[in-house]
Length: 113
View 1 (spheres, rainbow, N blue to C red):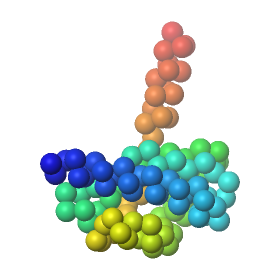
View 2: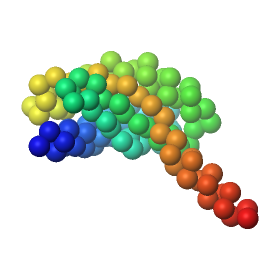
View 3: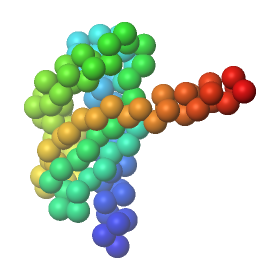
View 4: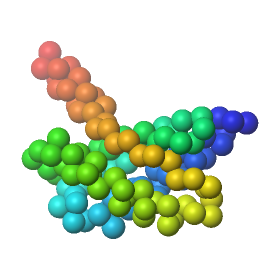
């Protein structure tokens, strides 16, 4: 039962954070395509690890740093969206999801052989 609740909260946060990144944070992303690929929530719902896939940017680290710098703004916008579903908005930690780069590298290595 607890896993089901965590999954629902994770999906809710993923959907809302994705919309916030695409619509409300255009001044931060500067035209880059930012996709929320996964959200992992701690069992007490106090921390959410947000994995982002960053495309159409030359410097992924700088973009991720800018997003981390705006964490309070993002959390505020998220709180306005989920205030009726969650009692407390979790603390957000952003990470670069490099799984797509890893898959692309594996495919490139297989094509070479």
